[in-house]
Amino acid sequence: MDPRVRRQIRTLLPFFEIHTGGITPAGLPGEIYTKLDAPWEHLNYPRPIRKFVSLIIKVRRYIYYNLLKNYDRFFMDQTVKNFISKIKDIPFDLIIANDVETFPLAVKLKKKNTRLIFDLHEFAPRQFEDDKNWVNSRQAFCEYAVKNFLPLADASFTVGELISLEYEKYCNIKPLVMTNATEYKEFLTPLPVKNKIRMVHHGFAIAGRKIEEMILMMDYLNENYELYFLLSRDNDYLAQLKKIAEKNKNIFFLDPVPSDKLAEELNKYDIGIYILAPTNINNFYALPNKFFEFVQARLAIAIGPSPEMASYIKKHDLGVVAGEFTASSLADEIRKLSAEKIMHFKNQSHRVALQLSSEPNKKLLLDTVNQLLKD
Image 1 (cartoon, rainbow, N blue to C red):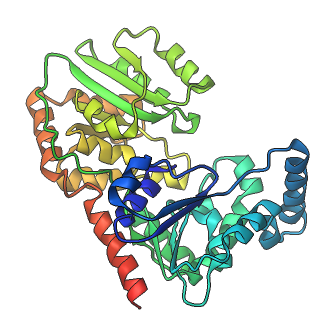
Image 2: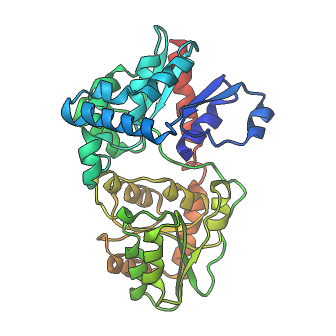
Image 3: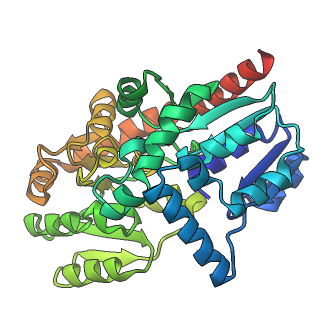
């Protein structure tokens, strides 16, 4: 399950009876619920197993989406109907719908006094605008869902200020900003910079992110720099990245670590690296988990000119921002950094680690929920 959703569940569990619904369980260890003595139940949202049934659903969805443009019927297939019948009698006081494709379901489950919170994450109407398959099979539904269901929400969240402004321009509704900041790691401190500058990048191996640009960056840096990758998804793209990097003895691919151990692992390095190609609007406006994980790990940060991340770096003096989304441009900025300057940025991350953790988001979520239930 998305780390953002897990953080919301953890925040609400001590105070409310929680029911989660989804294709997979919530991904929280059972001892958490036992320790908190919190009522909790996961409601499974199963995908059809039999190939014939799955094929019928696909054909049906194609007809309603592509031919009839009936997005209500496109969404309301038999799997969704079965799920609704399973939970329709639970008297929910509040439903938090995670991502735009769950909004119609939340509206179907709403009763007279039920409050709705919609978590939009990114800018849904142009989520993967660089992917033709998504444009042809999902974009119209996402546009429909935002325009028709977002006005029914009692509150809404998104991940950054610039995306919130995009929603305001798109449908005259400005969601509250709940960043993807991670849990505060109080016990971590910045480690001294040693002879070699150790840089790190972690996350999913997704071709659209053009991770190879960070590999090419090493062509512009000397042997005093090392670059480490902790990438999930052992796919063809990851194999391609390893092939590109194999000529450089200062590039290393390590196994990914669990999210709850990530900050401790990243703490061993000096600079968190991220060049995210602006291939779509959400990549351009990205303010991802990994940015805040760099902060919790007490690292200096070096990025391409992504405006949301750049504003945080400049405001809090956390690192450097390249002039372009290119390997050579980021290498130019990194070469300027002395060990003392890198240490300064690491200490700045330490200084703002609490401020840029999930703690402010917990307060925002609890305040919003309590106000809606009070009303």
